[in-house]
Length: 163
Image (tube, rainbow, N blue to C red):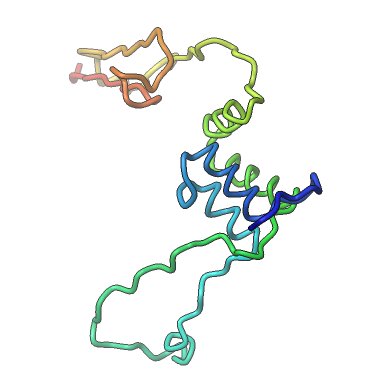
């Protein structure tokens, strides 16, 4: 049986699985899982047949599409504090700010509520040869996504006619 790591700067597989279940509902899904597995030492297996081919050769035959290797947490892997930080730095680079806020909230470290973010486009530009005919102005007074608006990107549109 795996024991929980007593060292606050490392997580063993049990610690990582518990964290992933808390934030993603299960092990095996989410970019946190994929990045944590890599930080713990998982590497995509090299296909011996592919490795044997030289740069100019191809297998030919147009065979079946090869499946990607299944990512797993290495049984003896350790996620260091630096690796954990790397997981969330990757989330930030990918623009997953709301995902990080979710993870923090689930782990009992919710960010302060700043209310509903409100913003809008100041202008839509067109040339002097066009005249706006119709404008769709979408506004939501509740946080998106929600039951009636499935995305946090609200649609905008305008129709123009020649002058």
